[in-house]
Length: 177
Image (cartoon, rainbow, N blue to C red; front, side, top):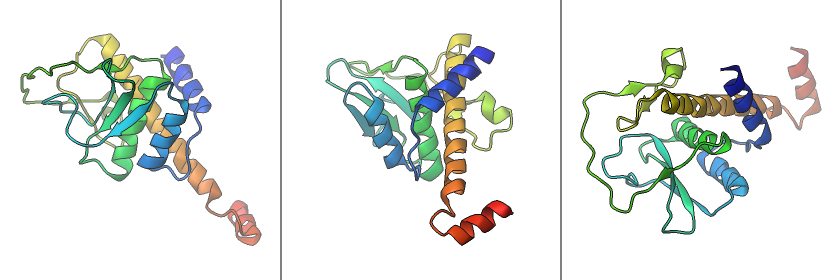
């Protein structure tokens, strides 16, 4: 786990977090580092029956890839899901290959909660019900989730630090407290 933690820290340090951190500003920053054209999808899931918050997909029949964020997510939840997909990219994980003809998934009556939520994370996020449960997949998902949490934490710290810039008196008072 120490190697994974270092890998996450290095990936986060190499990425410039936009300020303010919004869905649009984060996607624009991702496009700057992504090697192919990238599209942000917010409509219907790219895979029929998909029950997930986000998905990073590659489309061999097109010139670009896409990151999909569930349209019902807004604000911090949408940013977190996009940051999770960014984490997959920056950590060297592979995108989901979008099949030519989506298959009908078997419905399942339960959801898998991430280890971050069970470990006290404030944002409860369900793992895709169609996802494999092998240990390697779970580790990949946990790494991307940890990256997303850390990105949002760093962005919040940056916002606090720049909140009082511009007025020297207020800035000095803020730092003296």
